[in-house]
Image 1 (tube, rainbow, N blue to C red):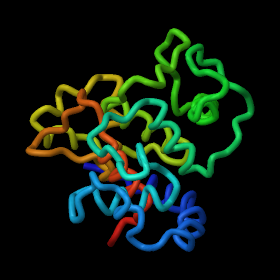
Image 2: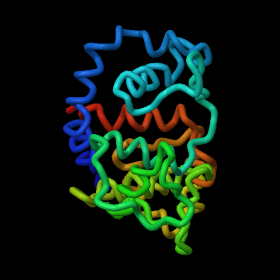
Image 3: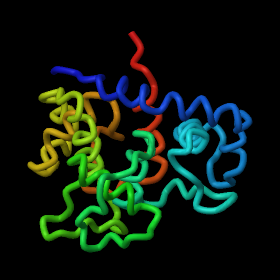
Length: 213
């Protein structure tokens, strides 16, 4: 089994300046303490705190993060766009269902330009649709392809439902699992289930944490 960790280093370089600047402005623990629905010590509490402090994610209100809410496709590309420094896209993009004045407009156009998001094949992006775990893996893989394309062949066989990953997502899921970005629970990957905001925060934490060893 071949393991890839290159994407972590790339993401770390992209976000370190933003994280440092915001860390000076946000008191330690302030992000977590503000959310009444993020229990202290939960498996995602530190990841939420770090994602909010770095400006990669925000709450659904002043006091809630809604960790169990499904991540939308618009939200997923916006997080990757912010992770890359929120660059201005060269054009407006051609997705037929992305308005010109939404919070995800620039992110969707950037993701399309970079080949990270290609839509549904009919010109639509479906920004408000929930993104599944295997679809998120594809976005992460396309994001990584700009600098590396390593995968961990055979890693899906370690999960009871590894054979249920869609053929178009298999390589991407191998990459995400092999790099430690997406993990299973109880021996399953649940590739068809919608990714949650808590899970996305944890993915970001893993992306921006240098590999040990």
